[in-house]
Image (cartoon, rainbow, N blue to C red; front, side):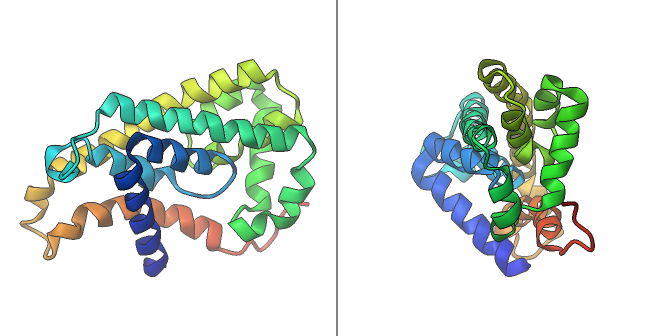
Length: 213
């Protein structure tokens, strides 16, 4: 588990370091396209790069552009997942999704959310871990008007991206204080960010005792 988190975090950091805002867009698009890539790692690291100490040698990023890039990526990835649902890709995902850590229970949970709350579920789900990644699929299956879907997906993603970026800023800002309590504190910001993804990945690697059909 630790090795997986370490490799994942290193790759995400590399993409953002080399791609900047576009790197954030790409990573968050992957996350929202029903491919488990935790925004809980992506956005906090992007947030930490708004600080001079962590952005060097590049110029610090802007927190508002970081959040916008994250929300834009969410909208683009959601559009792809919507299209899959709208064109009948549900059964393919249920059959082969396990190979990208996508569980049947995640799909069914998202479908129940959408059946119960309709378009409001698209907005609310963007603010919640796990279900936010998969809500686009049932929206596509239900043929929700695309303009409403993409608007709600973007708007709902903005506060989530701001929140996670802010967490990254706060942890990075207090790194010096944490150094009093931890050895090897040069790595502490990475460890804190990766810890946010630990439970998320554990959820997807843990086998289900019973999965709905």
